[in-house]
Length: 91
Image (cartoon, one colour):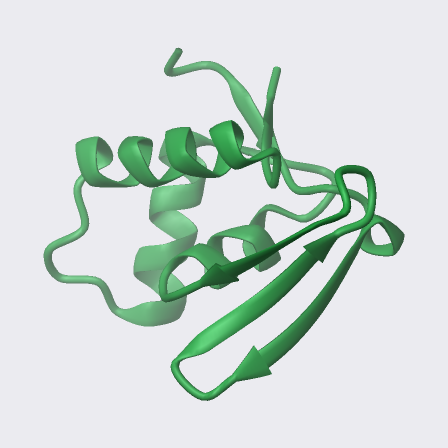
């Protein structure tokens, strides 16, 4: 799914609160609170509602966070986890 566009929920659909090493994300639609660690909160923030492809997201993460070891496979795995949790949508 290289051409898939990944999107985060609308900003009014989640409540995000940093908690030391974790970030709590309350997903209003499901009523579930997720505890996330890096890079998941950053992925959600960068995706936003407009969304990005996997390649564009990897480029943006590398630019913003100076990634030296980020791979498409690792990012795809994180995105799959976020999709499964309902925090990211793939279209």
